[in-house]
Amino acid sequence: MDFLYIILGLVFLIFGGNWLLKAAVGLSLRLSIPKIVIGMTVVSFATSAPELIVSVKSALDGFPNLALGNVVGSNIANVALVLGITVTLSKIDVEKSFYKTDWPVMMIASGLFFYFLYNDSTIDSKEGIILFTFLIVFLVYLLKFQKQAVVDELPEDDEALSWVKTILFFVIGGVGLWIGSELLIKGAVNLATDFGVSERVIGVTVVSIGTSIPELAASIIAVLKKEKAISLGNLLGSNVFNILAVLGITAMITPIHLTDIELLNYDIFWMLGVSFLILPLVFFPKKLRLDWKDGFILLVLYGIFVFTTIQ
Image (spheres, rainbow, N blue to C red):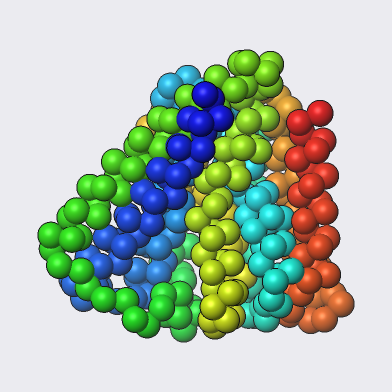
């Protein structure tokens, strides 16, 4: 039954996030908001909505390790699993903005997260405000200096929805995310209890993979449709958003107290490690390109991470 709760929860999260995205993009187009703004705000929010809903609800319900594990695990999954599968299917030519902006900001955000947690095993409201403020500064910078990189984030055939459809998608999407988070957390916590596994392990494996499915699905569909090259910045941006927005907003609502020290002693170093690894992989053996060999390395590392975590 717990597995059923988890599966149903993931289904609701995926469809809920998709409906919310449709509504948000439709509304933005109807209000003539530039695509550049849509790409960096609406799309980023929608793809990180499952992580946000799950983390906030987990923290409020008294499961902080599930909230933290979800973000740490999702960031590991985005880089090692999602990017690994994507570049195994199709090579990615990396833009210069990767090492000028995207990667440094991701590492700074990850470093801030590590420092706040290492300092007193808590991310409080003040630290949440700092994280969220950094996100705003980052978005303003991108909108001002990286316009061309952002414009192409959305397909050109998006259409403005009617007001009725927009409101309907917003309501259905929001309800879907809420129901999905309820089912997923219930199933995950029950599963952890039944098998004697910690919230943290469930969070960094099952829950994090589930909340990373929207990014994985979008990447694979783009490859299969042979659409324009997938930007590495998209996945790195998702990781930045997970830390600065998901953890920032969660901490502003309720302080996140770490109780499972393994997340700080083990999982977070995997997150920092795979995040850093992207830099040398982008330059070797071929400059500014990721291909199947890099994907294989990332997938092997993810397999090792999951295997060692559940032991």
